[in-house]
Image 1 (cartoon, rainbow, N blue to C red):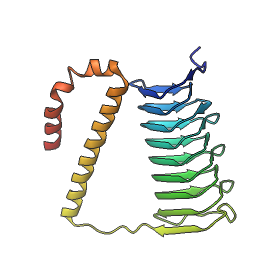
Image 2: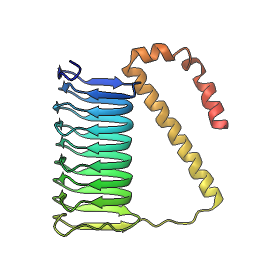
Image 3: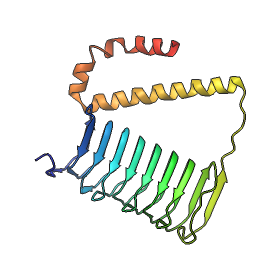
Length: 225
């Protein structure tokens, strides 16, 4: 019964505190997900998909008609995406069964492409791996530490590569970057907290006593630390 697919004729919101959550429903609207391990196993999503989590997988049978926005540690795309995809993660895999019908924008330490990208791909990465059986139907624009080995014919258009140049930084510049990263992490954490709070009343009720009243105090102690 857990794997039965229902239809949701509205936007879908889910902030999961479980170790793993699987979305099986057909959704005729936008989808907003946040959690640890998130698996999208819907046959069809008509709107945009917004996901933030640790390990994220879009399964092979899934078709998404809208744009896709994902931030996570590991991202695996196996399904069909009809609009633009914006992916940010440590490791991003476009699997061999995946078909991305529009432009793809990716940032991550390691990017692996095995499937089909029907338009152009834009990437910023430490390492890009493009399988010999992959297909990028238009252009590939990427910045990486080293040039990727790409078989002739895999990219149908032009390949524009720019090497990432690592510059030595002063101590003050390093400290400033850490401060900026800390601020960005704080803002992101607060944003995720807000999204999950809006999506889950149960989460709000359980958290407001332990977190809400002491949130500013906790932030101040954390920043000082």
